[in-house]
Image 1 (cartoon, helix red, strand yellow):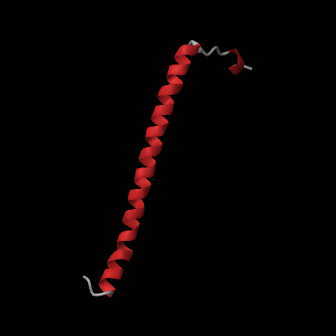
Image 2: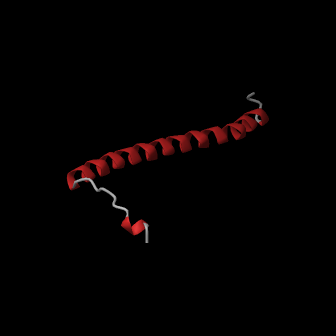
Image 3: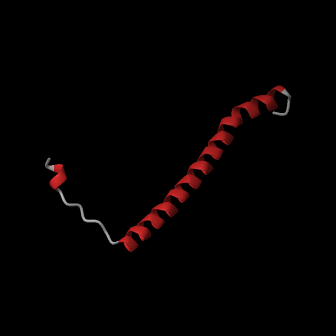
Length: 60
């Protein structure tokens, strides 16, 4: 097949390891940002309930 004839250059092993380390760091940063965003969304979603609770208890 035509695809099998395409040569794809592969960097040396040390460069592959550096790339993998960079990608691992980036994935960790993305995961941390995702967790932070999720926690903030949970806080935002809790606001209406908290406001209603305060309103019905006479605090607002």
